[in-house]
Length: 283
DNA sequence: ATGGGGGCCTGCCGGC
DNA sequence: TGCCGGCAGGCCCCCA
Image (cartoon, rainbow, N blue to C red; front, side):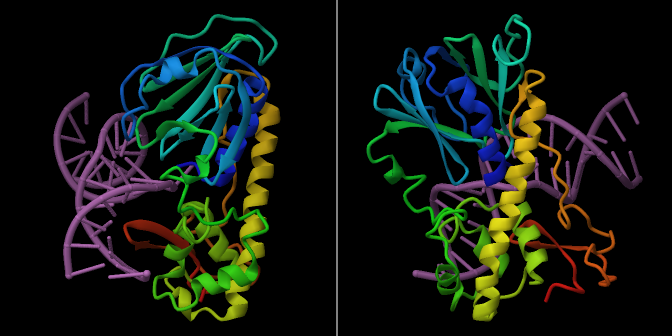
């Protein structure tokens, strides 16, 4: 569910609560999410200081004083919630765990971070911080879309010769890491490229043009997430989800927002996923 | 190697 | 009110 901007927003919201703070107590309430939780996870977290909170693609990485790194993936329905004493104005009791609250992390300062995931497509793992990038879930990831390695030449080269639809190519985490169904729809809309165009059929200029558009769409979403965090300071709650208006995603049947276009947003299914697009201005 | 489809889970929503 | 199908923003794995 959460794509790169949502995960980055979660990271920023978690930072003041976790970074530099000691985990006083951790608890797992079931043995597995998508996969089994790592052995003795609660014990390996308890007593450790969180040295740094990082993000790689849609993964959160918490480096611990033990030399291990906690990896968290939210899957489709995973949520992180903060409750406790420091965030917000008032001290109050920790709430009773709710349905699908699978992992509880209590910080020494009194805050609790709760991992809730109804569908359990999420994942957690622990690994040595040294060499964490070669973890099986991270090793094959492509470049960060907001990083320098994601260049116009790079993307054009990766799309060249590919027969797969450009939609599938941009969802391929080995080509670029962090885009999901929503932001790919938004990117292709702004680029004026139909989701079912073959990736290899784009001109070099079209492929190159995707890079700044991807950066722009993600940066705007992260900015919107930052705004939501400022509001979030008011109360306990869920991190990373924010009101964000999409131009095509979920807008089937609505008029195209492009001035003078006059088209109607349509939906097609590609590889079992919905693609929203404007048949008039995306070619 | 590449591309497509199935499967993992639960919840929600609309239609009958 | 209840049941059922369809849908959901991810990712691994298998197969042709």
